[in-house]
Amino acid sequence: MSISVSIVEDDDALRGTLARYLDTKGFRCLGTHGSAEHALRELPQVKPEVVLMDINLPRMSGVDCVAGLKTRLPSVKCIMLTAFEDADLIFQALSAGALGYLLKGVRPAKLLESIRELNRYMRSLNP
Image (cartoon, rainbow, N blue to C red; front, side, top):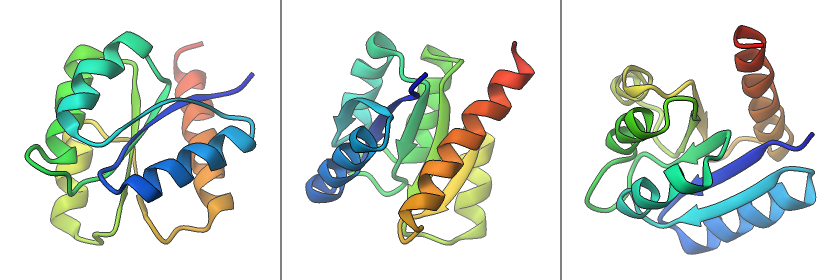
């Protein structure tokens, strides 16, 4: 069974590359979003299992978007995918409801395995 994923990232090229990559690796990319506001409007309708979330988005941050998503879509699993390796941002993201934190330079295989591991772990908690 493939894992459904949505991407919230303001860099158009990276967003598209991630979406295509996930689709070729057996995941279902349900959508991509260039802003937190767009993601908050659209994601509750498509209900992805996992969201890859950038932290540094225009206007509303990815941390605030995660907090908003968790109220609208409590079962969503958010992984922060960011260029920032900052302890305060990691703490804020996890406090907002993110369940993982990866740097954008992560090896592609590690990104895929992280999504699978998180999904597998969360399913084991709620069989």
